[in-house]
Image 1: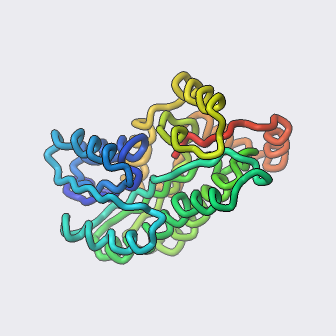
Image 2: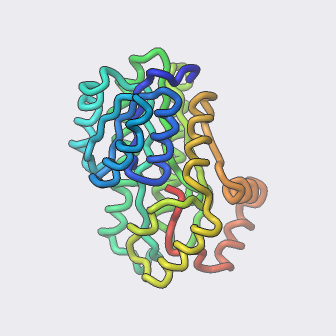
Length: 273
């Protein structure tokens, strides 16, 4: 997109982390925002932070896995803002479990948010985006959408699917004014670990400490997202970890998976969504 000022952006998972940081940066660049999340307190805090921008901000308490609610969301956004130009599908959750121990209920819960939330967002907003002179869709995938990690079967399944959806949609929209970007962050300092299911408290504590020391701030992801929107980039790798994993997978696809398998459990979490 050549122009961000006075555009309307929809951001899911806007109550914290990458969603909040992206909302703040888009507001700084002159966008009006429709903030989407189920965390009422968190989304109110994001809205409070954006007041100084002087932009029009609306909040929408929506579960992205709820098909009917997502189908109603575009009309609610258009009613508030008149139109929509940007969609950032960021909302995500994680389950830290090997498949043999993974409950079907948790698998369905995760796919509902991480995959169906993205599908619903793309499908229901696309007719509105196609009406504009230029528009863009951003789908947040993961480094776990590039390689498969033990203990992350459901998360990898969802993020590989988001990457595939994004690439296919990009091909379908190539000759239109709507761009598509798939984002692969890496280790990011977000709140997703707090909501991760099937993970022990000791491991949760260790993970939080690791991300506090080594994780990349979500503001860096936001910068790369806005950079990609402005340049109509299909794919964005954010952290050195993401670049390393992507390079290894391209050069040595089988060897990379063998090395991961031999190392064993990498982590019972995903921290980049």
